[in-house]
Length: 187
Image 1 (cartoon, rainbow, N blue to C red):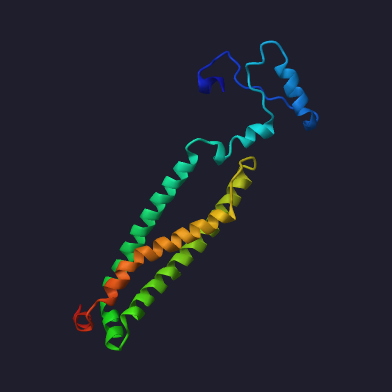
Image 2 (tube, one colour):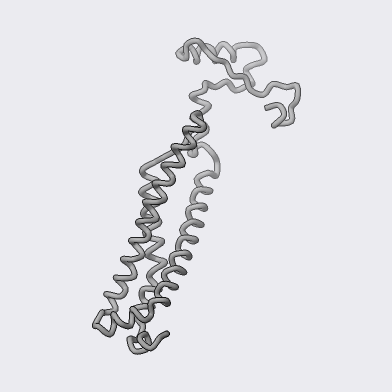
C-alpha cells in the first residue's frame, strides 16, 4: 500500500483481527480513545465493505447508465444492419409471399418474429455464458464478490428485446412496402 500511494515508511491502513467479532465496537472505541488517534477513521470490516457497494461510489450510477445507453445503441445498430441485410437478401422470398397474398402486416410480423427469436436466443446464451463465467471466476478467486441480480437480468432482457424490435421495425416496414413484381424480378 505504501508503494501504491507513494508514502514509503508510513503506515496507511491497519487491519486488526479480533478473537470475537462481537467485540469490534469496543475495540474501535478504545482505539479512538488513544491520544492522537481521534483524527483517524476507525471502521469495522463490515462497515468498510458496505462502503464498497455501487450505491456508495460517486458517479457509478451515471457510469452504469452510460454503459447501458451505449450497449442499447450498439445493439440497435447491429440488429438494424443485420435485419436490413436479411430483408434485402430475401427480396425474392418476400415477393413470392406477397404474390401469394401475404398482407403487409403479415410480412412485418414475420420479420419481427424472427427478430424476437434471434434476440431470445442471444439473451439466453448471454445469461448462460454470464453464469458460467461467474462460476469460473468465483472458483478461481473465491474472495472476489460478484454481484448477480435477477432484477438486472430482467432489465437487460427487456432492454435487449426493445432494442431488437426497434432495430427491426424499419427493415420490416421496408420489406412490407416491396412491390411483388419488382421483388420477383430481383436477382
